[in-house]
Length: 79
Image 1 (cartoon, helix red, strand yellow):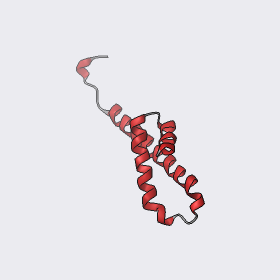
Image 2: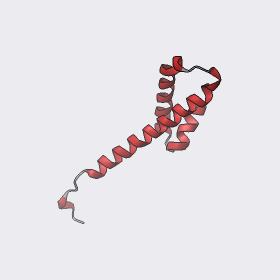
Image 3: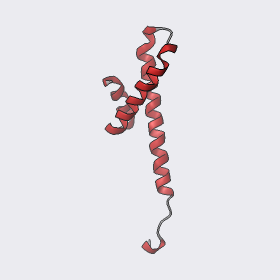
């Protein structure tokens, strides 16, 4: 999992998010392994999965940030 963690961490910059994304990549790879036709393509194949998982995690973090920003401000707090 070392290389997967390194790939997703370089894209996410967060260790915890990288661990979750790397685990997601391993899960997706395990589910899709039977569809892999050429075993020599495995390194590139699993790296692509890791990059997609990192992108999914980044989109999820961005969506959570947008929801947080959308919360109304308390008018009593003032400017």
